[in-house]
Image (cartoon, rainbow, N blue to C red; front, side, top):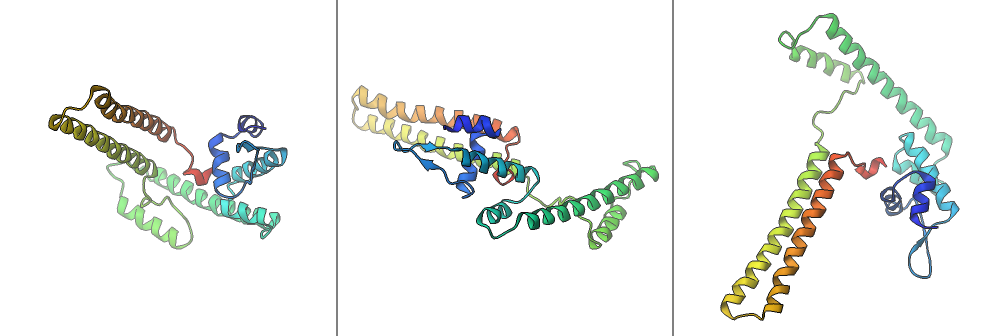
Length: 213
């Protein structure tokens, strides 16, 4: 079957499927024409992956499960302990917020330094609050996409400038000149279209974060 059918059967996108292939979690056979040919065992494998990912099982653990080096019950036991840790953290954060509300704290009267000291004590006892030092992944991707597109556009503009300069040195036949300028222009338009699509994808909260698929 084709990938479109697999998307409908499993309920995940083509991008997800390709990602799992790249990660070695899915081995897809090739037809005589070189195209991927999916079978029901691939559908079942993808359904297993989707189930495990919905339970937040890391890709490394899924890979170990499929390799036979990790038992399912051991994997699920790990996840259960992780959920318990997360639950304790959420309980602590809930209590912290309730404490601030009971103190009738306003933004003006809020002693942030004292609150941070309390948080640090809780962190030493094992509570995990949000790590504010983590990089803004979405912003990083957005900047990367813009810089990549800007570089390609600059290269294409340089090519156009070079062609125009060459034409001033020795007249270039119009068909050749049109091709020399037209190709970079088309590439610039393509880069801008790809950039727009990429920015919309990032803004929509894509999941690479493929590792979170």
